[in-house]
Amino acid sequence: MENMGVLGKVVDYLLLLSFFSITLTAQLDIPESILPHAYNPLYQVYTTLTQDYLVLEQPAFFKALMTLELVYQFPLALLNIYGLLYSKPWFNTTCLLFGASVVASTTAMVGDILNSQKASANLMAMYYPPFLPLGVLAIVRGVVGQSSKAAPSIGNGPSSAVKKRA
Image (cartoon, rainbow, N blue to C red; front, side, top):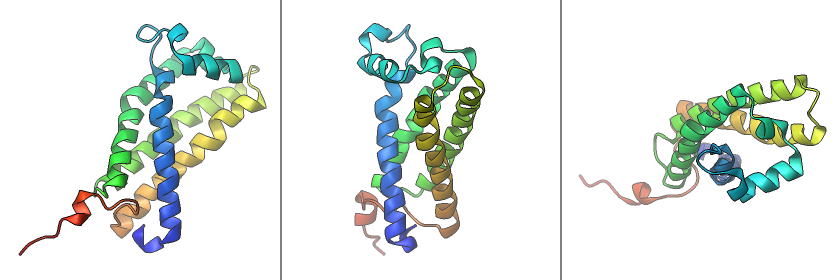
């Protein structure tokens, strides 16, 4: 995406902010047996504000998706932060994997929300607008980066500062 100039940098900054927010909100995915909800302030604030029936009731499919987010998407978000900041060549691949996972899990949750009688427009706004486009953007970034062999456009970490000696 380096050859895309400003647009590439904007996309990378949006993804970087998204990866950071995913890592910060990962505590919502921690099972109550490990971190009781009474001691999880983010859980208390989120459920009070949104009345998110999926988080409150935790149907089986949702628990499975939360486990996926905790053991797969969270580590990928951390890797993507590092890869983006330090211009790692594998960033495009991890970004593509992250995006595909986000689109798949968000689609399942949005499908349940649309077919439930419990969802409000406010709840739909918590899932659809931020996560589905984020997943698509990560997929596109991964594919465009793969086809153009471009390194991430943010950061020039140690890998770009070291010059090869002949």
